[in-house]
Length: 235
Image 1 (cartoon, helix red, strand yellow):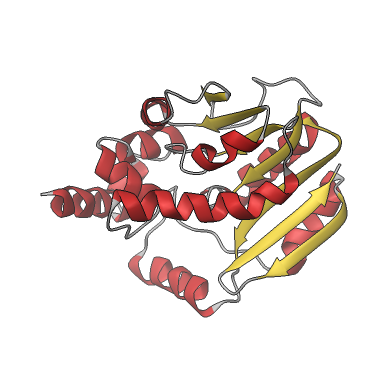
Image 2 (image 1 turned 30 degrees about the vertical axis):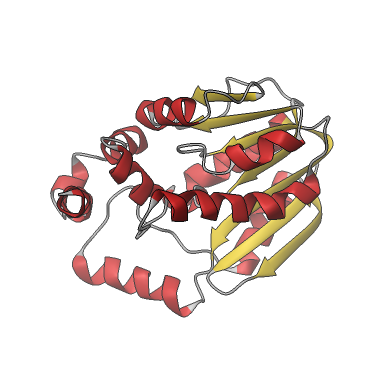
């Protein structure tokens, strides 16, 4: 039954005609969050169990912890169900997660109800205006910007810069368009006529560097990890 629900959701999202119905990020991710199972699969496509889902979050958190200390105030852009927050919370002062989906936020709050320094916020899907400038010591976003139109992703990156404290660091993940897997997704989207709002958009390293430097980030490094490009910078 779980598999049927998940497959139905993706058929809807990939439909040439029905994708127009879900032409907003909010509606798309609200649909994905209908059940706990569909939410997990939407965040991490093909996940087979809760154990695997949370294990993936722990792996991401292990890498991010080197940017964090006990006084850090952190922001996760596109927090989903709190997959990463769970494993960073013990190492920082506060961690805030934002997501466009109220259903995802509800699941995240339920999952981390005992974590006193974790705060989840539903945002408008356009910017980070709910936060004042110079608020966070560290901001990260993984498997989120890839689901936005590039123009919208750019606005978010500008907003990330705005709410980051001077000297604060950022960690952003982008799909590598030149990798075989990401390029294959692009070809499949093209041939199927799929234009759904949450499709994965690939980036090249020069694109990421151009955007990050234009926004104002310094001490920039971009690492090619095969399917992913990881950009680390400082305000």
